[in-house]
Length: 329
Image (cartoon, rainbow, N blue to C red; front, side, top):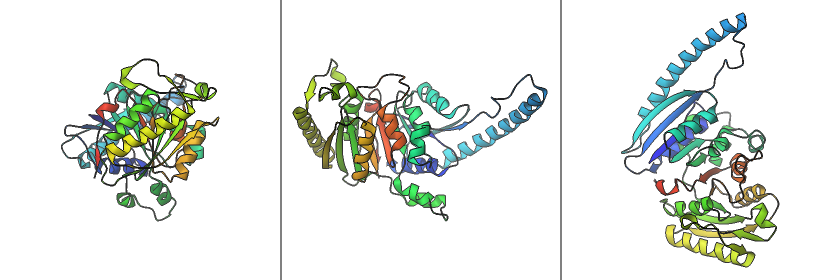
């Protein structure tokens, strides 16, 4: 199993590392810590004398920063205490989301742990985030580590990084958002393989894709069996959710605290409102839904949930979901 963790000096990146070491990973898991340095001279004119001098200065500064960053990441990797696992490090230059996505696909990463930065949810939703952009571009599942308690800590003028060590990262209230697409079904199967030390409370919300919503129906993913999914009418949807709840109860001993069918025009709002109402500390959903249009300019509901959530989010990609497992401790 291969895990990628982007790192920088900010608290949320440290939180992602703390979250990683609170888990039992399969022996032989390979971790890669990646630091991306953004280019500082891409907007200068190479034909302008002043800019040429400026470019040379910036290049020298960038090289010095890269060396210091490499030393810092190597030291961080050496301090990461994960039993029976290999820890590697790399420093890259360029656009952060592009470099991370390229590295993840190049290394055939199975799982990414990304610490979400402390911009307000409304600002993330408007500007987008590295986390959502990367999720849209990789072949692996992505976890955005955004514990609500950390956000509250950062508002305190006496905040120190050491306080992050006291955060409970294991989720206790989980919302599963499903549209019964292949990735969505994979998210359910993936959750069955995760070990919890405390029985989680799980709520399930299903969101109808725009096309199916007009017919009050929903395509039910058949996962690895292939074929075109059958159409579910609303009453059968209720049955499907009930069956899903039963499977989760039997497989991981979870308490199912509620199910809901969202048929509004804004699936993202439905998911986020439901998660807030349930006081969720984690939302689990498929990396891409049934109704997603590749490269659609407005992005997917998954991307919007990542940007708008006030808690951690895991986006499961069916291609790699079977390769990812860990247990909380």
